[in-house]
Length: 297
Image (cartoon, rainbow, N blue to C red; front, top):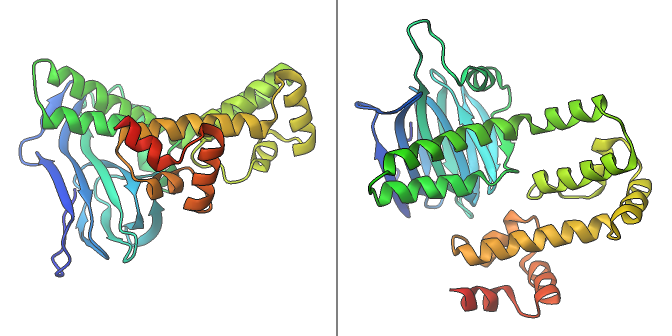
């Protein structure tokens, strides 16, 4: 649960819905808290014991969170999880403080102590490293959920339930997607078309975390030159061409959303600098990212 410590450093804004004393129930999920916190420089999240499960998504900036005294640096695009009875605290960076979305909840069990999210609960309880890079656009579900709470209408309860379920499942898949990829790759036939599919699938699922394209070859167990040649023969594109195409699509989506500024988008997409981001975008689209953003606003 999110608590702040007053050390004369203000929040930039905080949209919070707090239901710890009277949780809201949505079938198998009890909602305790949902919110959006934009921190001031070096803002401190007061240490507290978790009373429920929590999923946090870092929308921008950086800082650190800790569970039971172990600190984990986090930055834009990271997911951080907490479980009941852990001691949780955190702090925003003094130069680039984070903004994050959070969802606090518990699973509702039947009289035999069972529930449909048992695998997800077990994963959260056993996960040794509570930080993972988002590869599945969990931020969109957070934004949809926050907008729903900000404008409650008929059928909002149904929408809220659906968005929460998607956040919880996408969190689970983010932690386990690499395991699934590795397992299926070992089990299935390694023909050319299948390997090309794995390259495409890896780029699609890891777009925001890929820093060097050679990591794809490392994961799939091939040399990069061989994999690149095979990809070109089958698709007519180089791996870099496909990656650039998908990154451009994501760039356009983020620019149109209006949720992030140019600096944040360059950081989310792992560009070395705003200059390299702007140069790449202008080369592909024919105008600067700022001009494109203004046109679509």
